[in-house]
Image (cartoon, rainbow, N blue to C red):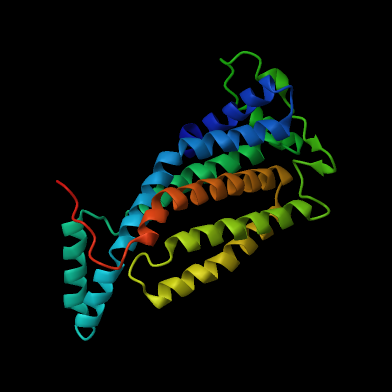
Length: 254
């Protein structure tokens, strides 16, 4: 069911791009990544708006924390009451990310599948091709060589994994800068965000060292698009809130 709904459509879209982009795998993977990231832009905007509105609530949340520091249950009740009053879903910043995750997983599974490096992998790929789309079967196997890379194999010089780590780190840094002062101002949550800025890039770098270099292309392009999006949203959504005094935010109009 997962293949039928998610991986197969993405795989065949990648093959279509490959067919019409002169059998250039690197261009097909790049375009596919851009299309998926742009399709997810509304969810990303929703996430950033939620974080921006939570940032506006920080002065009032800190007042509640100080007032009810010895009564955790009352603090939680008052915080939820404030969220309801302002029309904010506390999970609004996480929900879009949870929705994006399956699609992102399906995307890189499709890339690995399309870059079949073995006869068995190629045979498996052929069984997932939409034969009602003319000409897709004729483009197999995909050309996997680009510069020093075989996109179906790990980068032997570790250049791509290093680029994955660098771009992932910078994207996480932009996200952390955007999230500063959001949620509850909990030092533990802030420490976790700082930890993610180190552990997530290293984790993705390790994956890039172990799997096809085509996957690294996806990570790098996705990170660059993410950096652009989060930077633009920070300027558009975060700029005004950063200049506001620490007074009470305006109530949401019904």
